[in-house]
Image (cartoon, rainbow over all chains, first blue to last red):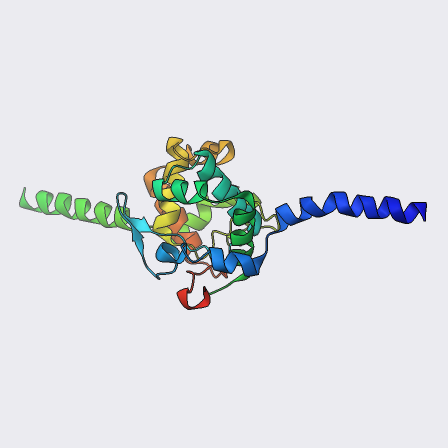
Length: 106
Length: 113
């Protein structure tokens, strides 16, 4: 009995951590609507400087989380992406990254 | 004299066209340091902290490497590598990785609510 309580306590302590780092692809799908404005148009280009907006569908979850955190922190400086990332919570970032990593549209 | 000028003009045109787009074959030769983290074809080595660069847009890869090189995009590891690269090296590397197969794609608007 005591062992079970300890195990349950450990699970309860671990649960919020898992929820924060995992990301929910279904929730991310809804939150990713804004992303499609630029990343959902094949061949769409950034201006000044001029280059294609990167392909992000199918990208690695961990990298996407790091990229959005870097925009939020300002270590990546694209103005639109900084503004977008700063509007997102940690959970939003995890959810969006989970959706993007799980979707492919080659 | 006329011949000399024609050859000089041709030289300018050839070097200009070489600058305009990358050479994937040369990119592969230059890519050895990249391969440790990004894999030989840019699909990674199983560590998801590193992005998939295979099949990414060449001009975005070029923009990224230049941003690492200037320090605008802050990353100690990529800064070190990018600072060894000329503009032409960057074009060649971008052309090589962009030409590789991957699961990267643009988002599909229809799939998002």
